[in-house]
Every structure is written in C-alpha cells, then in structure tokens.
Length: 63
Image 1 (tube, rainbow, N blue to C red):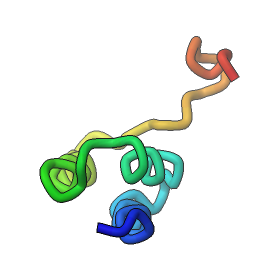
Image 2: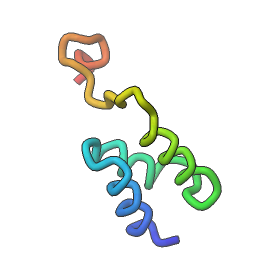
Image 3: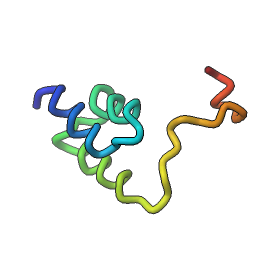
Image 4: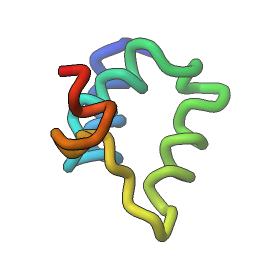
C-alpha cells in the first residue's frame, strides 16, 4: 500500500492527533496486518488518548 494512503487513513482515524497519525503510518506496525486494527482499537476506546502532554508533566518538560 502506498504510504500516502496509510497517512490519509490514519489521519482519518486520528483527526485530533495528526502527529500520532503520521507516526502510526510511517513508523508503526504494517497497516495491512495489524496497523489498522490497532488504530481502530485506539480510536474506539472510551478513554481519550493524550499524545500532547501537559507542559508541567515530566514528558512535557522534555520539549
């Protein structure tokens, strides 16, 4: 599959977190085997995904 298709598909699944979408498409698991299933599972969870940490958290202080 073309990587642009993967980026577009992941961006559709994660519209509020474009960095996660690009990372899943370019560096994540193979989309055809587990990538889309994993993305769907993350998308349909009741708990929101916080990929942009608060600046006061240890991860946010890393820059």
